[in-house]
Amino acid sequence: MMVPNIDTDAIIPVEQMKTLDADFGRCLFFNQRYRLDGSDNPDFALNRPPYRKAKILVAGENFGCGSSREHAVWALVSFGIRCVIAPSFGDIFYNNSFKNGLLPVQLPANVVEALAVRIAADANPDSLPVIVDLEACTVRGPGTGGPAIAFDIDPERREALLEGLDEIGVTLKHEAQIAAFQARDAAQRPWIYQHTYL
Image 1 (spheres, rainbow, N blue to C red):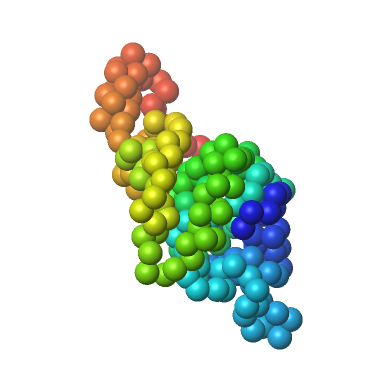
Image 2: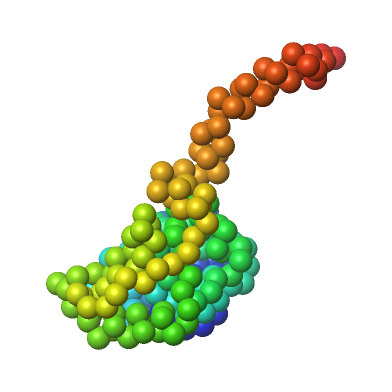
């Protein structure tokens, strides 16, 4: 989807966010994926084989710009997308991605464009896929050609994604240190830990 400035309203329209029990994956790119009668739009990329079960989305610059709706990330993850590769991202979307287990990979525009061309030229469901290796921080594929493309990611965010941890899970990794601090602090300032109820 090499279109620049795909905003969060295009990713999931506000009309599709009215309930928390909605199938957000079905709502992904709702206005582009479906015709007015509700049938699939055959011209939309994610409705065409081999992309119907895509796990990686390659997109244009400034992906996820617009409003701060976290539903945009929920829709991508619910659909099955685990990684978005783009030259740049909307700031809030980028941060929301890590909080919800979606890997945003930022690569130079010419590298993303070359990758998109290779994907389009090798749209064979039996060929080797694009592989994003979070441990090695590389992107490979499609097919057998081409070198590994390195990407940068914050080490703490990388570790959290590899371990499947959200922000609370990351904090709980330090539970022993937190408890030790609270014990020391309670000994030094006991009045803070005394509860008085009126």
